[in-house]
Length: 469
Image (cartoon, rainbow, N blue to C red; front, side, top):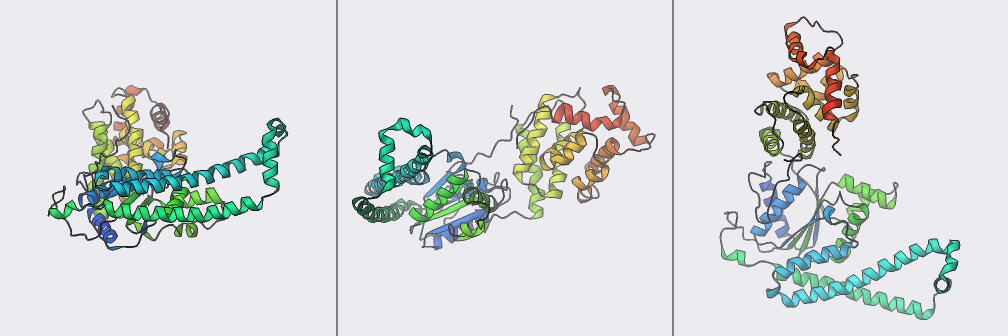
């Protein structure tokens, strides 16, 4: 049994599988491929979209499409790897991993790049250790506990007191050697990227997607760095800096999957709130591309399909699917009216799945109220808290749901609005037929006051298990 919707499974060569590419972004991916194949200079492209808009799904499909068209491709999840201590090691390691797959054809290039990577890695490591020691010993020098370190104290004090001419000369000469090492590394990377170019695709008119292959004359190494906005701020910035200073060579293009507004927060975290974060980031990329959102018609066409798909993975109700079906229809109308991201839909579905998994048809389960509470809890927690206390007004409820955008012929919209009206409006003519029907359905649950319905459902079911954001 699952309570979280499963991410789509996309293998390395799937490409733009229609069952996953629900927003039909294949054309966008093909245009992006054509652009990269035409640019000879090293390019860093930022693919910008909010979290949950489908960047990762697109990038994984596009990576497969690139591979099927003969491009050497690396897909790197920065968030999954931000435990690594050094960004250079992470990037170079991915290049070596790809090169190792075709090492037999490029053994000399592989070995040369490995040697140069090790050399540069040592330089970076020494610099990191030196900086760490310098920062770490500052606190010690100011502490009375330094007395117990004896010889270490004397050495540090001596080094801090004066820098000899010999030491300065060695530093300057070392700087010259470092520059040579960095340049040799970039040359080795450029040579290796040319060796990675897959030429066998030219021998066939079809790729593994069964489509005609465009005659790309230039197939650079495409290094995709995804989830950059979700990883540690320091690691994200280190990735950008290493790409710019070490890996920006002809034959290698980088595509950054990120939300630039969130990445700006990483810059402020590292350098303080006063920095012009957007301006600072501009030096790390050449182009910004917005992920297409899809038209309203496409959204309406595929959102319910997506809802059905994720609810198929989640716990089943014991009402023959009637309870779940009502929830899907209700959420679908709300999604259309508010253009929610799929990640937000996932969070709402997870909250609902908890309720379905922990209740049965003998419990009080009113789909319009439970679904509404789960949506509120995800999107507007303050209104949810008011509803849970029995203090939300019908005006606030109607504004939140936007029933006027659900369509005039929306029966589910009208039923949802009526249930909330019944539960929260202070003065109703309860002798009216519809309200009597509602009351009769509640009789066996021993609820005397209709205003208790929302607080009871929120407290007993929606809040029973907390789902983290």
